[in-house]
Length: 134
Image (cartoon, rainbow, N blue to C red):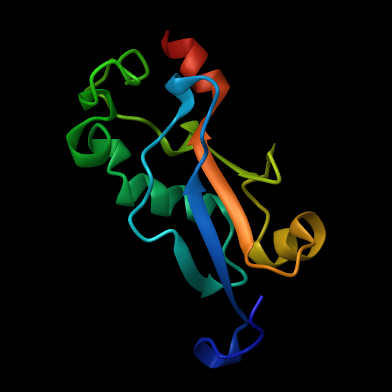
């Protein structure tokens, strides 16, 4: 958490957003190229999901075209409707537990993360989504 300095003195937060390494490879998503981000502390988890959806091009069939384009990886995960994966299928976690869409980054940093280092969040496809697509 970096205090003030944002637009209009709004508190900014620097955090890490990385793909989770899952035991179930069907839940994995590609890494984003720049995992260290800085934004408003009021940024909510739903905003993070929208960001990932756009950056990974999930609405267009996955990163770089299709998540299933990696042979043998996530082949059955893609939506039957042009491989589009909805924002709601992305799950963001802190300390291994899913965090709610309405929570802000500042709230998570202060109440869930509770560490001196940068807030670390991971993302993956939700198990509910994956299992309905198998």
